[in-house]
Image (cartoon, rainbow, N blue to C red; front, side, top):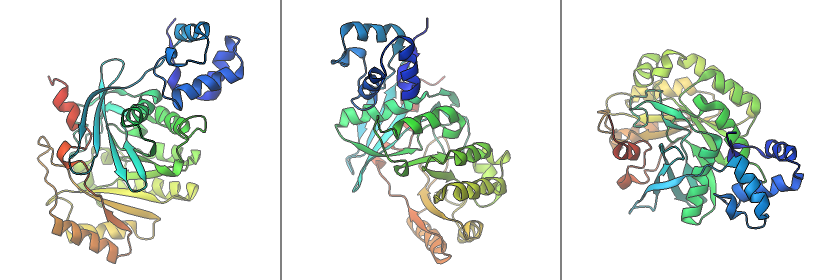
Length: 345
């Protein structure tokens, strides 16, 4: 019999499975807390359980954890970049950033990505597979354990498209906010998507309370389709209709990520078009000078152009910030470390 991935099981599911083995309800809560609060990576770690019970668990379940393959620490701002090896040998990246309010981790949701965005290193070799909920959670637990800190904020903006791995993403959100686990507030979690419209509607219905971040990067369909192939399936009008529905259902402000590429989408006219597109919407725009990835050939806008773009949006009443560059000396943008480590065909 194949062992079940116990760290992907929400507490009610685990309770039912252990009840089938004639174990009381409190045992499920005890095991769940060992994994999701205390960070146990083996059943042997659960020292207040009997040896017989630990053996019984080991016969029926497996705990998938993330092992640190590489760790880079920025000399500038203490940002930490991890390359994690998964149980099957595949690797994903996570980044931990320190702010005044605490620690934020950027986690991956897939091994690679199939969305094909022109500026992204994660997508260059396609998508190998989805991550299980346990593997997304495991990135948080491994980073906490290694740094000996409490992570209070999570952004799903690492490798992969979270809404292309919808079921595992939703399960991760349910478990990371569970009071029996890390109990991170949903308001401290952001889920980024390139614009898989049907799943935005589904997520809206769940009313999870998380911040939805839309990777927009252009205000017209021709330009966006060139940068983001997903736009050929769901164009901007359809995407914004879904975003407005999300805002209406949740009452939450939506964030738009806009990567500035020199000579491509960073002119004053581009800023005016973006302002007109988002006018009247409960939103925030996060401007991001593109990361210089050798294979893409794209270069970031200079500081003057970035400031002019921001000022144009602000003048038009669009709440806008420029993302602070963290971990610049360790290529903290996800996807680059894995490509230098995994042997490419």
